[in-house]
Amino acid sequence: MLCPDERIPAVKRREAKKEAAAAAKDLVELSAETAKEDLELAKEQAALARKLMLKYNVRLGWRFKRFYCHGCKQLIVPGVNARVRVAKGMVLTTCGSCGRVNRKSLAQA
Image 1 (cartoon, helix red, strand yellow):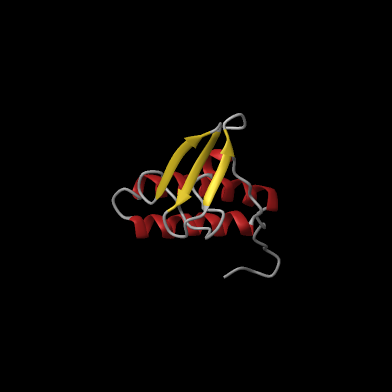
Image 2 (cartoon, rainbow, N blue to C red):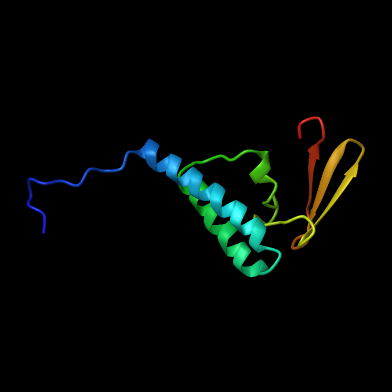
């Protein structure tokens, strides 16, 4: 038991944000790999990563954003539960769950 004089140092917000960003990045990568075998587990992992990103205000780049549908906020993995097409200089990703088409310009990608 701790004496009142001994205090546990609090984790700095900046350090917690860095740790959350690393954990979210790892979870998104893991969920993309897991999606081929077990889609439900991959969706849970992606939801946990998104929850971390929202809690700690972490923004990930396009490489990781493309794994989330902008409509239903669920995990989308090209070839598993999403369709990807290239048309007129755009990358069109159609979500298999809600049917929303996410567009990204090839000049930006």
